[in-house]
Amino acid sequence: MKILFVYPMKIYKKGSKYYAPSFTNGILKRYTSIFENGATLDWFCRIINDNNSNINGLNEIDIDTYHLYDSYQTNLKKIIQEYDFVISRVPDLLYAYKCTKYCIKFDIPYVLEVVGCSFDALWFHSLKGKIVAPISYVLHRHIIRKSLNVVYVTKNFLQKRYPNEKNNIFISDVELFKSVSYRYQHQDKIILATIGSVDVKYKDQETVVKAVHYLIKNGYDVEYRLIGPGNKMHLTELASNLGIRDKIIFFGPVAHENIPKFLEGVTYYVQPSLTEGLPRSILEVESLGIPVISTRVGGMVEIVKDNLLFEKKDHYNLSKIIQENLSNLNELSKYSLSVSREYDEDIMRNKLNTFYKNAYMKEDE
Image (cartoon, rainbow, N blue to C red; front, side, top):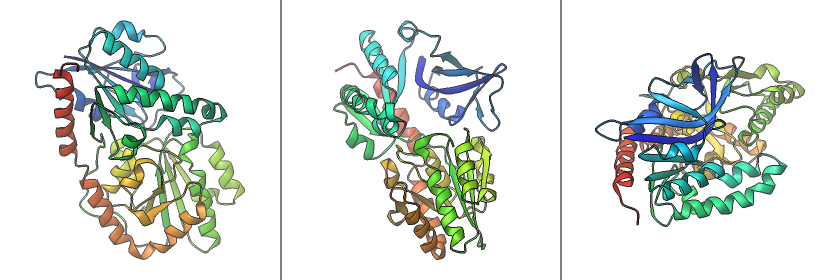
């Protein structure tokens, strides 16, 4: 059994090793372990060949187990015919369209994994993105609607925006941390944290920096920890202009297994994104029992307590939520743990195994 995983995210090559910013070997292994007789998996991705890349904290990909194709140098139409099963992650209009087209043409079973909203991702990216977003939205809806097998990472949001007429299911690929109790201990300082690339506009960490400034002006001692890769210059300049540069701490990328120690003592995890599907980071943080505050967008409304949701770019409302819930942290911790248990890895793995086996075995309708 040969599986091709088409997900053109950036993979950084340094020397003879390859590193992913938000993907682990554990997630890839879920696919190869579906079939009892074993399977191999090759990954069609974007390889950034740069020995000067900062790969500290990124997840090393086991290339002895998973072969990587560089999308810039590989003909997808040519190689896809060599595979028994194809898994394609969207949004990525070019390759979602190509995968669907080629799999149908060559009669290859395939699954589309819908992990985000193409419209929102483009709309909040740039002026050019706003021009392309409506076109991408229409085409993604068409591709997803007609696909034989679709996996959504949300329970409702992506299903409503990109409905499927055939066979579909909700499955999350989250890798929860093992925790028996809340890590937070009472202290006078408020510690906030966010995981995500610091130079991706729609992550909008600027709103949290502004909230930190507002809270400090109102007499609170606040620290903001940012975990993730990317150019931090714009956030550094904003913090400096507000006079709070020493309150903003950049840890850079952190390997998945090391994240819990960087979150020790955190009061709230904040996800200020302008758009999201269902971020794995929130569920992973909730499995540590940390209260989560997020914007009221995408699938986050399904996993964050309603009174901890705020409107996009509203740092005043974010500040208010932070202040008003300081006396309720233990209850919010219990809520986080209860939500994460709904995404138990064994439950998700069983759903994944059953759905993908059926997708492979099922004849085209």
